[in-house]
Length: 386
Image 1: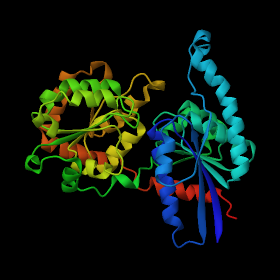
Image 2: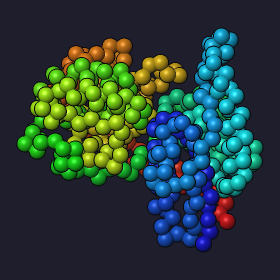
Image 3: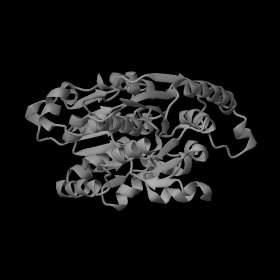
Image 4: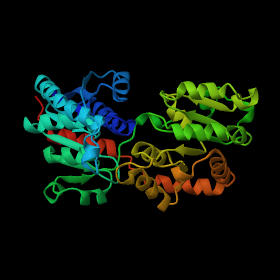
């Protein structure tokens, strides 16, 4: 049987890791009964979220040094301690990635963005190994702008993002949409109630799912804590708060009375239960990173987005605006976020089931269910099996 050695890289946030894992799963499915078998190696950062996510599905992970790529508007900005420290880590990461690429000898490299993907892509490009990169957002990130110079093909979630690439790189572009994890589908509302520990007698209450992404969002956590006494009068809340802020959120939960605790499920991270949570949720509330926006569309759920600002070019607002323009979401600016405002916006949406149904249907029109397979086929198209 032929083998195809595939080096995968991308990370820093879950929005970069989830598409990579979706493509890996698609390749594994395609290999069933085929005359070839994939052999994977994931190269990521030593401090990002990717290691745990990759090892959870049984894939080998190699950590390398990676410095965050920051845009600086002045010389003083470039000379900050963080930037100087990262400037030294980047070349170290390139050497480590070079050694790993030469050791693994991949037939193809798949890179899904984030600063950690730059060293492996540069190493692969210099070694003349085919590279496929994927951009999840409406704006091409700095890491992918650098990686594009070494890429063989460039996959985009949205066609309009091609305008941000140099002319010579645009001929490499094709559009796939953003892959989503198979794990988000097939959930069951009743199973979710039992799994999360909600009282089945209160199933008539609507449920909101609050998420700050894989890393959590402290400002959203604080607003939720402020809003809980009022929110829990008319809905149940599943709140993914992130590991870093978990202890504070857990302590705040202890201040609730028993009825409120029964309606409030706090999870630092969300794992295999995600499909059931999406099935149960009447409304998604959270950041508008590429992963959250794509998954909201894929499962057809209305959303209240609170974009993180600033990011490079305010990409989260642009991500969310696509769903707003389609009638699938509402934006609450981060600058206006408070507990009382959160209660107002959630109450408005939960009190109008017909509108939420229309929003969910509109979200589905933006879904790209074949993105993972299309990217998997592109990976295979670049590889030369042994």
